[in-house]
Image 1 (spheres, rainbow, N blue to C red):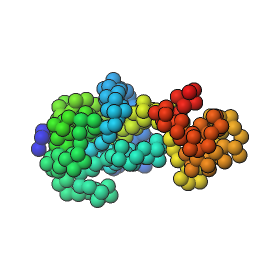
Image 2 (image 1 turned 60 degrees about the horizontal axis):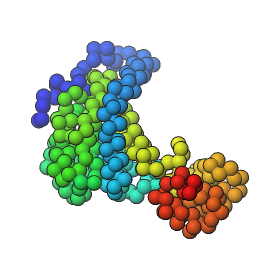
Image 3 (image 1 turned 30 degrees about the vertical axis):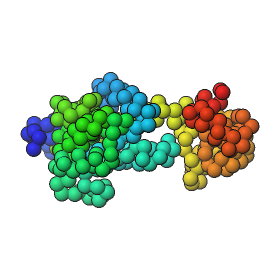
Image 4 (image 1 turned 90 degrees about the horizontal axis):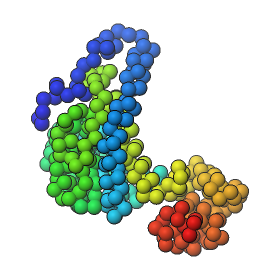
Amino acid sequence: MIDPLPELATEQSDPRYSQIDQLPTDQIARLMNQADAAVPAAVAVAIPEISAAIDAISARMRAGGRLLYVGAGTSGRLAVLDASECPPTFGTDPELVQGVIAGGPEALTRSVEGAEDDAEGGAAEMARLEVGPLDSVVGVSASGRAPFVVGALREAAGRGALTVGLSCNHGAPLSAAAEHAIEVVVGPEVVAGSTRLKAGTAQKLVLNMISTISMVRLGRTYGNRMIEMSAMNNKLADRAIRMVSDITGADRETAAKAVDAADGQAKTAVVMIQHGLDAEGARALLESHGERLSDALSG
């Protein structure tokens, strides 16, 4: 045990919720809604630390590094979720943003006994992934004390990686192990100790910021549009056509033909229309401008 569990804010019992088992459903729902409403304010307090971490992460990613999330239990599942959404949203290689959960893939759907207590296991995962100086490792733990996550961060730091600790308690061991400490203190849960609630919501909000803003900084959006997405199903194909039409001013038929010729790549289709190029020429122009659509359009 890293520190006394009962002292953590996330483990406290809030007397406001001590009789929820005796309340009608709508009243419990209102209490939960009121509790959840406090989460964004707690995240807002940590925005300076969140922003500093994102700038540091983006700088390393521009140099070729990866973004790796490490977590256990609910935190690990949220980490894997955020990482898995980057390829379809931002067109990234699956290796660029990865999520590591204590206990491995099995732990995504069921509890793996003792996995989060294995500090050496966390360190071993960093070794397996060959973490290096260009990489950024974000440890996610509501308590801020999960040995697997702390062990991973310490190993990553020893390998020269940028380290970020995201927790929901003040003075967490995870913060001490990280170069950038993000502590979003949301207080006791409606169901005492169930950090899948407010703490989980807070972590998801911060992870949204880390991945999304990093991708914006890397030029993987055009304005607020997911320009790197590929049309891999009917919904995405329709979105890509609308996006290309909106950006270029072309009619839907012209946009659809360009998207099809670009193999579903919206960004390529935009350049094709704007510069009168075929798909190969558009891709070459994008490559010459570091894949940044704004530069390719103005160049």
